[in-house]
Amino acid sequence: MAEANSFFQSKEVQDFNREIEQYHLGPLWNAIPDLMHKQPKPEAVPYLWKWEVLEKKLQEATQIFTPERGGERRAIYFQNPGFQSRQPWGWASTTNTLYAAVQLILPGEEAPSHRHTQNAMRFITNGSGAYSIVDGQKIYMEEGDYLITPGGLWHGHGHEGDKPMIWMDILDIPIIYSAAGTFFEGHPDGLEKPSLPNNYSSRRYMGGHVRPISDRTPQIAPVGSYKWAQTEAALNGLSDFEPDPYDGIAVEYLNPSNGATANPTMGAWIQKLPAGFHSKAHRHTNSAIYHVYAGEGYSVINGVQYYWSKGDYFVIPNWAWHEHVNTSVEDAILFCSNDLPIMEKLNLQREEAYEKNKGYQEITSEFSPKLVR
Image 1 (tube, rainbow, N blue to C red):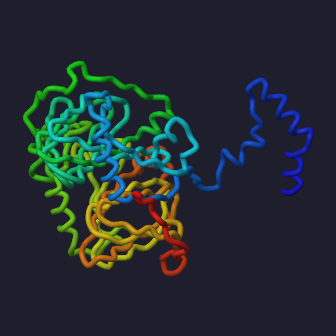
Image 2: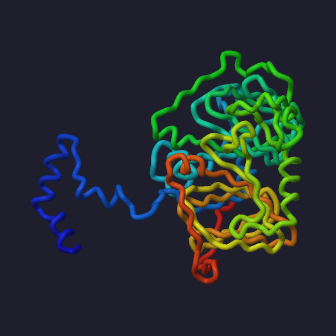
């Protein structure tokens, strides 16, 4: 191996590499170590954002950015430090494949409708009274609801309530951008006008996991909004059973017309960690972005301890060892968004259990979040 490395660094090889470079050609013999990693080496790194910082910065943003001023959306995205050197705007990415942000809309505001090739989904974290209008369907949003907007559908937002409303946005922007497949179009009427009854899809599926017989034919988004009351009931229904050793009690959002994930390129589920629950560590090729909907505890990611509490967000990159611990006396609720469908479609999904120390990592350090000064 040393002899081979010496050869690749020889003057003869280096001179030839420079010679072909002028023809926009490259030497695979030198590039293989960077192109063919023995295991995933994502640029994204683990990180955690505190709710107190996000809340303060969103409130400050209300004094500066409005839809009328061309802001389109008052959203602040989670910039993974691993992409900080990339331009523009540090690559605007939370993992190698996913973008995530927090968005705030004030009473009386309207965010104009648009459509794009990127798939989007939302998890409602704070407030009530706002709505999304998706392809003519006006969907009112409440805390704990999960909404999907598959690529190509018109969507905009408005707020008829009396307090600010905040939600989490997740889109597959990085992978669509990398594939050079981005299209974007603004709606000619600004905010699209309703053409269906309010909350149409969630009312059609009020019975839970039963579907109207007309939906036996697969559709891209037969349910636009998954209500928290049904999700909570599903979690409670599993509480009498043994939790999964890695994810606790978890339920995944599905498309009831085809059995696939609710959003075609992004997965999402809700995890309940019972009081005192300590999951075993594992890793997988899909990345994940978490929101702490309730409770407090910590996660250990590649040996580093990340303490979290209600409202916080944290990211687990591809192939990172991780485990979760609920330190409170009540259940902790985590919303998980991930790129599992992408990995499965590309036949890249792998999972591995942590075998050392009875399945639990040794904690080597504690993460210090950046707080508001």
